[in-house]
Image (cartoon, rainbow, N blue to C red; front, side, top):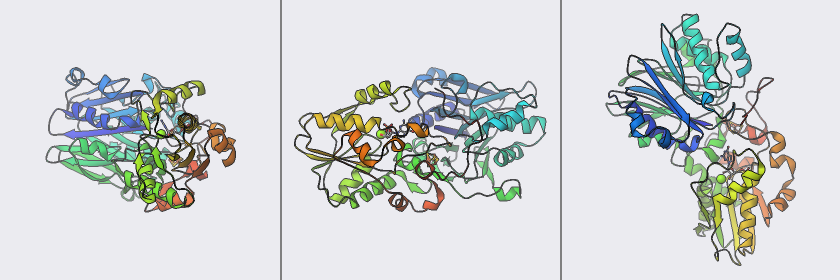
Length: 467
Ligand code: 5GP
Ligand code: SF4
Ligand code: MG
């Protein structure tokens, strides 16, 4: 999972805007970040491991003058966690065009598309999907003598998987999306000053851009200058790009996106609140004294639950915001320790109480197991665990780092075994039916990690993250 930004402005401070936009998307990737900026003559790239504010202090931004650029924050899902796999990818040809690509999503036919290019003497420096997209477009422009829009249309037709992508030339910005619209991306207008493309609308907000709309599945939007833009839809290519039915990632709304973003035609906070009330609606037999979230990812679900039950929403766990990602750590022992460092229950708060704990998802079971045990130690009478999504039983091939099938705890234990493993008095998941009722158009969503219904199967040899 990653976050992308693209901008084209009337002023030469694109780097600063990209930094701010990426900072608002830091939750989408914390391992590395980067940007490529154009001053109209050439493109400059800077990318490093680390957080946005560490990699891009003002002194560095000052060395990146330009009116247009693309940026990226990375959370590795495919390919090793290292600088060469970070984005954007810059292609500089000795004579001819230069361009940069930043993309979010995983490509399921990466291997065969890469081989196709390698067989024609295209060289790769990383094992990152973004580089494949950059080289694919470069190949169609340089070797096949096509315009960027035709090269991108070829890509949309040939490359299978999730890609919400920004593409920068010396003087133009392009944004495009796979025909299923799996990952989010929308664009906005900074009045009289330029355009911004972003994975999430919270980035448009921080940049003072008025959101226009999402990039449509299979669409290419060309930002020709700070005040001109045109769009090419799949229908304009005739048979080149088939329209597909939408498959937006429902897990974005459950866990990944920031609650202040508007994605796939939904307010993220609103979907999460509805999930909470849906859990409460099915919980007639329980009258808790307290409802708490596991901050921050289930805050709005717990609020929705508490609202429905007409009881107070409480903060019972303190989160240390300086602990990095617990989820991505390579070993179970390290993940356990990271969760322990991250959350601490209030003392003298739960004693003798009947508590509902709401979390958004169970993947390996690490987080809830540690938390339920820690709360129990402080003297809670009963702990009822409610999960704002169905059991995660299938890995994601489109850009979320769910582990292999075997590592998913819902495949190892039945509900009762899992309840016991976690140590809760009761455990309930959101049903598929209830999840569907929380979005306006459930038929437009991918739910494969819950039901195994994949729109695109990965080709043989597809490998997930190699940390
Ligand atoms: P578990 O601890 O069961 O392995 O993972 C579930 C917890 O991790 C939940 O609290 C959820 O908020 C969070 N989570 C779910 N999916 C992801 C993900 O893709 N990345 C990260 N970093 N956290 C996740
Ligand atoms: Fe999202 Fe799950 Fe589909 Fe992956 S499999 S795109 S996480 S809904
Ligand atoms: Mg969480």
